[in-house]
Amino acid sequence: MSRTPRPEFRPDPSLSHESMTALQREIAATARFTDAVGFDPGAVAIDEPFDLTTGLPDPTPNAGDPDAPVVVGIDQAFLTGGDDSGANTGDAGDRAVSAVVAIRDGTVIEYAHALTPLSIPYVPGLLAFREGESMLAALDALAVDPDLLVCDGSGRIHFREAGIATHIGVIRDVAGLGVAKGLLCGEPDEPVDERPAGWRTPIRADDTVETAAAGTTIGHAYQSRQYPNSRWVNPVYVSPGHRVSAATTVDLVAALCAGYKLPEPTRLADAHADRVKRRLVDGD
DNA sequence: GCGACAG
DNA sequence: ATCTTGTCGC
Image (tube, rainbow, N blue to C red; front, side, top):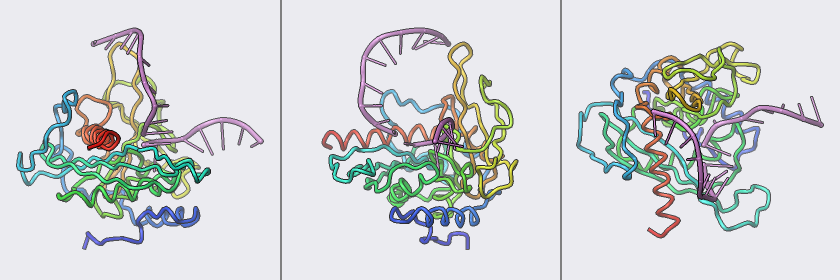
């Protein structure tokens, strides 16, 4: 009873702006920003960063504890098309590579990806309608069932509390969160500059968040990495996607970070997307 | 009108 | 997101 498909929420690039924002309000109303994850952050903790200097690790489907939760990182890369006939989208012919990496008990158990056309340009607040179909296709190509989705971008930190992590999480009815390198909207409780590793502060809704009362905690700034004596690193902005609270979202991201700015599932998905793109650009 | 604005 | 060399620091 908690796995109801919601095809009506699938991101459709042909929708009008009004339809898209209306869908986002529905999605936000359906989303649960409370804890229904099914496991503790410690159950998915990754202590050692993956070494990506020699390529990605080979998948080992049978390694580790088969009952541990499956964490899936998702990221995209883009292929610029050669068709310039539609002069206004700026994206005619462009395609998206969505890459997913499934991790269980600290090891990569599966990779998958999808290659799909891009039909609308990037618009802040409407990212799911540009990249959502591609992400869903990549998830469909995955054999294992995700217990947690780690998306590149915002979840509840969004004008209508329906960022891409929330959109995907609600459609698949799976727990999910978003990790963004920049803040889309909302206001940090405290200034975020020059903070030590491990520091965090709530992001509160401001008057640009149409669906929440000002002051509502919609996510956190989290300082995942910091150098002791060098140029300052910016924090990441983490927020609930679906079936997870803001507080648990930060704890999950902290558990999934292993020394780098981005959590391991995101690092791996990013590298996988680049690898798939390179294979396509070259020639298999 | 101007600035802000995930990927 | 993407186009890209050198450079600074651990």
